[in-house]
Image (cartoon, rainbow, N blue to C red):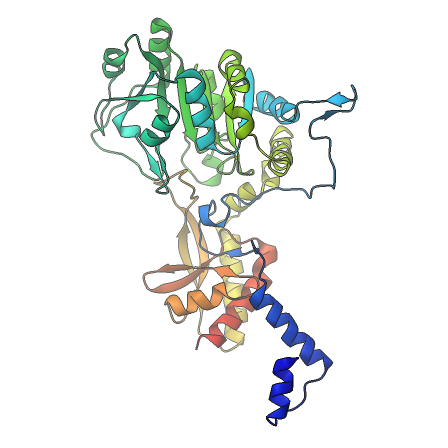
Length: 409
């Protein structure tokens, strides 16, 4: 109102009520933006860590829910009971536990079973993820001592056997996230390590990380060991993220032998690392879809299952809409990635729209649209990759792209 008064005093037209309301809305949007606004993910990275990882199947929460209340007994209940029942059933595990994320799962496992003792890890598996998760540092923070063995590219069964001593607590295998080692390589199988552990009285833990639980070949991807296969091979505990290939909320999930998992429940850290009601209800919804053998209800697998031909038709339709607005765009084939440190050496066929002005100015204008659009810059081209865009977002994507390109000229 003050701005309108000053403008009118300077000779500008007096705005009407609708114009004032529009200005007020713009002021509020600029000064009080949403804390976590919804965005359109046009990067071609399906599990995008900076955009919340896997798109969630998240039902709205009611005002109250029986989170830790047993309705039958009329007394306090166990908050994890519904989700652990589903986890053990789906993965075929004796026991399960859920914490805030996979790093927390590893910390709890190490602190409970390896505090002050050695854990054997191959040098080729001393991973760093995102600059903040480094396996050696996590182990030290949990009170365990790292016993490095082998070489970066080759570690043999004899290396593990030679490293076992009286202070050894376990053998740990870690998923190679964000990188792939090929060529002159060697590593023992999980079955061999389990047999060694059984001979020497040691558990074998697998930090699988990615949460792979389905055969990925129907989605055009090479398979990797699933949680179920790792358990069947004899791993005492398998831990993984809930928001990667499981396609659920952020969570750290541990499944395995009852003796291994149940001990974690009694550790003081367990309460500090327990998940909230939003994560638990979203995880239940995700697991229910898999238990009902309807994986395409999970948004991640809906995106993965989209045929290339459908993406091509959508990209061409989007390009026609933008061209009709006088914009020089074209539909182009491209490659998408699963992301999230899950399948580092694999890509997916995709289609997108190449925008003119392949620079940061165009990308910045897209991020300022409503809803914000996060695009990819590739070979000095701005690409709107449709692999991670849901069909119902296409109209908003077209409007945002048209506005961004017009304002960035």
